[in-house]
Image (cartoon, rainbow over all chains, first blue to last red; front, side):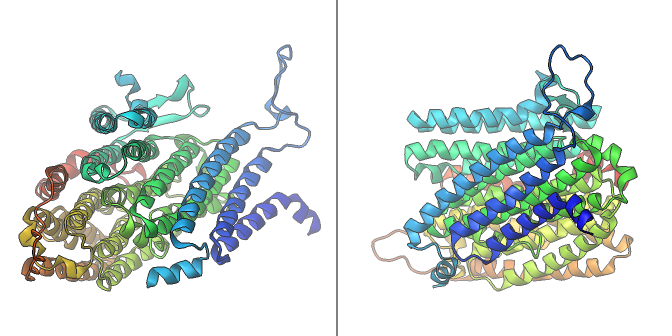
Amino acid sequence: MPAELAAHAHYWLTATLLLIGLYAMLSAPNLIRKLMGMNVLMTAVIVFFITLAAKTGASPPVLPHHHAEATAADYANPLPHTLMLTAIVVGVAMTGVALALIIRIQKRFGTLDERELLRMLRE
Amino acid sequence: MTAHLPILIVVLPLAGAALVALAGLRFARIARGLSLGILAAATAGSAAALMQAIRGGPLQYFLGGWAPPWGIEYVVDPLAGGIATLVAAFGLAAGVYAGPFVRNLRPRDAGVFHAVYLLLVAGLLGITLTGDLFNLYVFLEISSLAAYGLLALGGGRSVLASFRYLLLGTAAGSLYLLGVGCLYAVTGTLNMADVAARLPGQFSSPAVTMAIVLIVVGLALKMALFPLHGWLPDVYTYAPAPVTAFVAGVMTKVSAYALLRVLFFVVGLGGVTPDILRVLGWMGAAAALAGSVMALAQTDVRRILAYSSVGQMGYIVLGFAIGTPLALTGALLHVLNHAVMKSCLFLSAGTVLYRTGASQLQGYQGIARRMPLSLAAFAIAAASIVGLPPTGGFFSKWYLLTAAFDAGRWPFAVVLVVSSLLSAVYMFRVIERAYLGSAPEPAPGTSPPGEAPAGMLAPMVTLAAAVLLLGVFNDQVVSNVIAFALPPAAGR
């Protein structure tokens, strides 16, 4: 069992990060903390893709020009990394927009506590 | 030129957004003209691509000349072309309607509004036309990002509503991406057609099951399928009218389209999909009932319309779940009809708010005498929501109902009828106030509110006419467009 657990360690890491993020988004009353939860959740996806690309004994996918014969098995898969570069950019943009909205909320309502905000909205 | 049509439809609004933002710094009028021109061009391009796809089969475009599965591919089949035309045309209609709203903004903000609005349209067009699962994620998030910004323009409450939508929407996007990652791990490709070709031997893998479940949950959250609809009512209620009309009309539909694309075209109904469709069917039925019941309890007209949207999304998913060609025809026809009628309703409600400041039901007292055209448009679209002939809503519901009976799913048929009756009640509450209530005397010294400005009336009246035309010509729409758009897995 421990060996099996270790072999799937990256899946466990993904699932754990995902659940931590989701839990923070659902339970934290403060909007900034919710946002941090969202970031943790996005990190889980990034970890998943990056670990997907790893291979034992493979080198970075840089092809020396005199090295004519190259097999895919010798190199790590670069595609997931490039995909995650895009996903990170998406995450940065999301966080930026979210922080802009948070500033507006703070200015308008004077609090970032969700329970208080919802109470104000009901009145 | 025509060879590049598929990419131009997406790139034009995308690049145009940057241009419009720059132009808006100095010349607000030019920014508006430019943005409307780009939207008109995108509409014409989508319609042309749709025609070509119906006549000569799907158009394919390889980005940068890289053939799939290495490069990103754009595919305009009749389904994608139809949805793209819908998106672009509604972008244009809501863009025209936004005129008076934008004039109230500061000139610099007006340029930014047009730019972000173009980004939203570009994102949605990208989702419909792309043939690549990861590219779909990127466009999903582009459109969502733009939508969060636009939906927050309605003042204090809308900002909070938009923030909560952002959290859920991003979580949904991440779940979708995780699902795509699982599919990539199994098949080693992201191209939709290539995944579809490689999946059939792999359905026993738990990773595929996991992938399908994650993608479906992510997209269901984006399309606000009950019980994942929590973000929707607040967002639709507090956002500015032109934005709500567009978002309510087509944005959730595009997520529904993505779901249809993945389930019927990529996964091809293999593996766990039949079970998922069974669950989706009951979720759709629950949505149709719960949306209508909750709409009954509201006093804000925009909130009634928002909950009605939750219910109507249920019909569409119900059609997917039954899965016969007849049901899918009904679902796609309802995508079209609901986009037209819900946009029309939100535009009318927005016009009443613009002229009288009223959004509560009491404020609609006798309003039909003051704004006859706006309320006539509202009444026609409401009749379509209820499903009265000869409006379009009647025919899509008829298709769904017939399909439910043919497939022996009579509980779904009962749900459709009950939900329609409930929608008759909540729509009649508004109509009764507007037409039969007596208008309050205007305060001394002020004149009673009059009809809306022409820029707002034109798109509204056009949509109301479209509701009727879609009803009268539903047969032509189905046999000339939708019949070609049905997924191969369902059979023709």
